[in-house]
Length: 532
Image: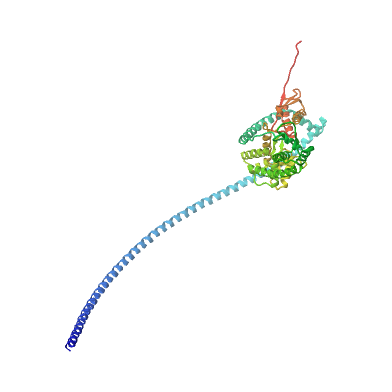
């Protein structure tokens, strides 16, 4: 019982202590709250004071900035006004100067107008005088014509000659009197033009030849095929000659099997056939099976390969010449020129050489080098088909080129006219003809038969002997020079010069020849006496 009372008393004391502690803590809390509130009021008052100070400073700064901006604006307005005044004054000065210029110009125009009016009056007066003089001259001219007519009739009556006869007689006399002067002037002008033209032409031709020099080899009309042994000759001939007959019939060539050891000769003027036959025979010899059926198969196969090879050769020539696109048929014809010769000169090699020379010469004189190369590449295209069509190769070539899409007038004219078969109207034709002559006349480029050579010399001499006053003519230097002996009694020095000129022109018009021919007229007087 006492224990419970003690516990209860302890609890009551504890509760009383807690309540007292709570009351003390509450008083302390209130004191702290009051202190915090006082501090907050002090801080608020301090913040308000700082805010007032900041506002006062901001107002002061704003007033200062506004005053500065106002001062700057006033300064800028002042400067702008001064600049405007200066510009306005300059504009006024320019306008015044322009006005003075216009006044002076107007005064000059007025003065010129007065001068023109004065000149018009003078011209009108002069024109009136000229009209009067013209009328007087016409009247005088009519009187002179009547007088001349009257005197002419009187001369006709006195001389007994008609007007035509008198004119003829007078012209003959004037021609005789002026022959020497004409020949002298002709010689002087020809020497001048020849010197200038030869100098420039020699320079262009020498430069072109020097820049492009192609080798030339003469081609024969036979090919040889090596065989491993002489027993193969018998197999090529076959039983009773059936193999060789079949081969010759299929290829169109002649096969010569003689005592020459180790070779068989294939002969034909058509180089395409000869090359086809040579390749076919080489294949047959290598294969070893030689009989009519196999021969026909190999020849047909080789012909197809040859057509393909011809196209490749033509394309290579077009690419080397750099002439632009060419029709496929013309490319094939160009390829066939590889197997065509003219005076033992390969025609395709000749065409390519003429092509390069023409391009160089055209570039030297300011023409289109590519167009000149195209003209030269196709200039002998007719030789690839001249055995199939009638006419010369220039005409055939022009027809083929036109047929297969060649539209350039320069190219067609160069093909048709590079041998002077037509009147030359384009400079490219002259260039191609010159390059063609260079390529053909190089030493070793062509071979000429004895009959044609002799005929050309005879024609040269015949042309010269057809002129009056010529006693003898001799073609020398392989036809490159013509020596003419003139009669000294019938021909004067001036007439000899004229005869030389006329012979040269006649040779150009009547004969075809490579290169150029020098004509020399010799006139001399010989006195012979015999001492007895």
